[in-house]
Image (cartoon, rainbow, N blue to C red; front, side):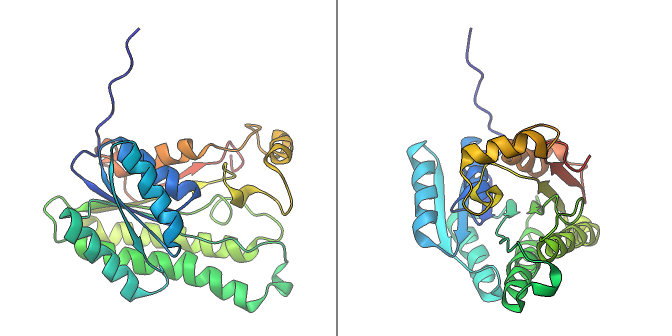
Length: 259
């Protein structure tokens, strides 16, 4: 039995992943690198970004870490500039950076937490889209953008998550609107909406991974969380030529929770 040939869908292309220091962002960055992409990971914590770059380089890939705050337009402009300066183009962007503040009903949601989620989850995606589209529409091949939304907000509701759900519903609306407006620029924009996945964000306060596994047996129809590799595979599909006619889609990866 022979092993499968390595996939090279992104050979010679450059992929940018925000929030690339951990979780879904790191898994997505590793997946792009495994398929031949030059990868740029961005986020606020230099140490974790460098860890991601190290993992990519150990596997024979090429990567760059850039410290950036997605809520600051100047940081995002500099991020895109650094990407193009290093690799010559920006072919794929994954706007993954996001935060979850949950546990309180709307009436008790602290204003500071509300503003933090708006700044990162909504304004951060808007500012990233603006910087990315400005670059991609100057390129002969355009580009592809995938925004990471959530099943919470656009597709389902959960008590204590209304603030977060509002920001992710905004990401869905932003994705569809931007997709329609920039299709003619050669930029395809889509979204992936994960449910509970194998990251710290899906753990309840004080909950272990084993305890989460027991809870998920009845919390979703599939009976488990999605792996980060499963979510990353959906992102890569939407970023690849295989989805060349897919524009403004929102691909839900949540084990049937929103079905």
